[in-house]
Length: 374
Image (tube, rainbow, N blue to C red; front, side, top):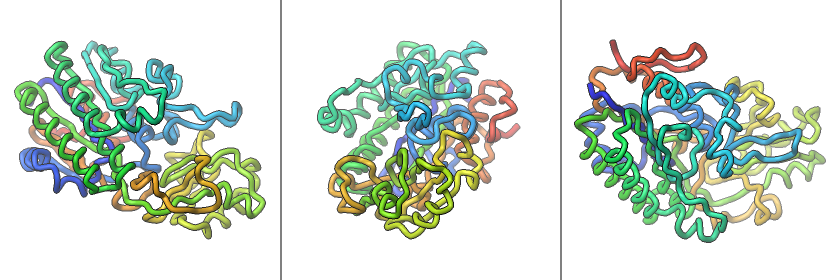
């Protein structure tokens, strides 16, 4: 078994993309592979923080892309400059990076987004910070960014030879949002990421084992729904509702939870409504009183562009966050480990597996198990 490890995230890469990734498919044939369920709401920051801490959002505190602070009436944005460099302002649990550093294991990381769970490494390459949304959409989320990510990862290897290399490819997610899953634009990103994976593997394979995973897939959407406007129609006011296919509903009057539950069950585009107490992994004051998952083809919008109750989603073509099958089913690939056990594997097993690889016992609060046999 190799002595170093590359942990690679393919943001937004649901299993439906594997048929368009010849290199990753060949790696799957050589290694070990499982289709696993993501974590609801299937959002980048929630899932990556869970993967990197080995604990659920109720413990690490990241219940969406950041979280909403009720007392300050403020969304804590995971992509803020200060959070990127000081991740434990938001993440309330140690990451595997923290644990490995304390044991002298050197690590390096690069990501397509700021990705606070990847911070704290000995060496960190951050993506550009875009203050202009138009510029970001033109240059910050397409397939070219992942050429930069791949080249930066190769630089980290050549320059630093880290024992743990963390790599986060982001363009599949961005291009699916803009053009829809399996669109021409999305498949260009899929092709690019597969090519960069091959370059990394060819250069690192003699020294590194690989764990490759996705945080969520996406599904094509045609309609947005403004749940805040819908609830107001029935006399229910909210402090905030997040955006996406799976959202938190923060009620102005929590005593209206039962009423809001019944109203939301009949809302357009709603497939599931949960009280946060019904979802143990989200049962924390950071969560809304209610968590809602969308039907296929729908997403929940809180943007000022979403006036009225629902409308045509012409500027967003793909979405995630829900627990619909195309979104929730993701690949988990291990290569270079020898004997592994992927029966009933989950994304929560990644952190214990990384620690076991470096012969470090997992903390008692970690949810999953090591996938390495023996």
